[in-house]
Image 1: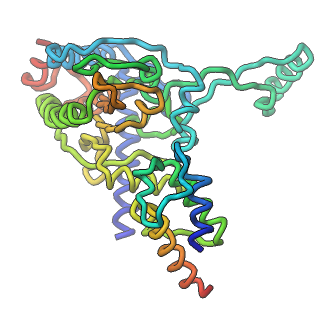
Image 2: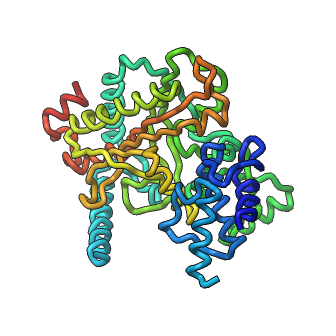
Image 3: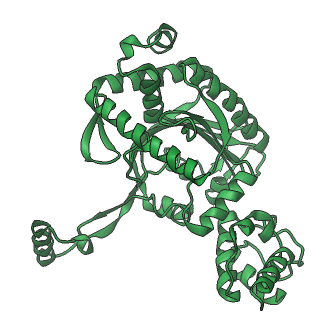
Amino acid sequence: MKDKIRAIVVEHGRFAGNVSSLADDADLYAAGMTSHASVGVMLALEAAFDIEFPDRMLKRSVFESISAIAMAVAELLKEAGR
Amino acid sequence: MAQDLASVAADKTKAELALLRGLLEHGLLIDCGVPGIYGRGPVFEDTLQRFNDFVSRLTVHDQATPLHFPPVMNRTYMERVDYLESFPHLAGIIFSFKGTDLQHHELVSKVRAGEDWSQLQSMTEVVLTPAACHPLYPICTGTLPESGKLIDLTSYCFRHEPSPDPARMQMFRMREHVRMGKPDAVVAWREMWMERGIALLKDLGLDAYLVAANDPFFGRGGRMLAVNQREQQLKFEIVTPITSSEIPTAIMSFNYHQDHFSKLYDIRSSDGETAHTACLGFGLERIMIALFKTHGFAPARWPAAVRQKLWP
């Protein structure tokens, strides 16, 4: 799942440099992802995993690293019984 | 609770209609047939000018550079700053006719018949200015002086949000001071202004206080942007009760853009680092409406302490 998330983050995060070597726990905002780019990441994740982030998850900390995103996605998939 | 909120909103709507009626009957505003678009009568304009002079007197030692831009701007400015990602529902894009004689004939026929003629319009290279400071950043590319920059701007601004609330106009004037420079200088400037802004408005007899705020971003993505903005404390507003004490109205706002505009337009501090920017805005019409609501529709009968500030 992390590889799929990483691909989405790289495609939609609008980073300036090469980010293919980003660690799972690297701060994506520090790496150059803007708030607007994080919205694109959020929407792409929803489409890719067929999930909907509830309001409580629409915040900076949920999207700050690949690990954090993976935790949130896993939680939503579990809630959906998948 | 839901019932309470509904009744608060209903009371506010009633108060908005009553206030609008009062402003129109006293010739302060002039109805133009569209909610949120009004002419301004002579007393309204004189009072607004007096307020502007009051602000200018208070800030004379800041030595802000006054600049003026028309209320339309280069469309690419709006496209580049992600405005359409954040506020597609508020943006005003100017369209015009660029067709042939035959299409012109079709246009006129459709207008006469009361049919939709929007398909015969093409986008132009200009948009209505959404905030007074937007035309400023693109002309500041380069290295700032050692002390940064401070600019004083006033512009009519457009937001497409038709409303019967006289304090929510579609076209209104925003006076802004914009500070550019090193991050600590910009943050200190914003903090100085929060106190100064409240004092200035209280001096005019307004019950003004500071709140953390967020912009009205569009859609679900917008909810995330709003939460980010609040978490990072990037936006504050000074609010005052105009048509509701439970839902007060913002009359000044303070926005810390960090490096959003300076990265985009390559604005650098004297040390070569990307500069930070922040702005404060006075909602001039909203402040006028707050004053008329608080002190009455006839400025000649306003409290002496307030008159002394505006008509010294």
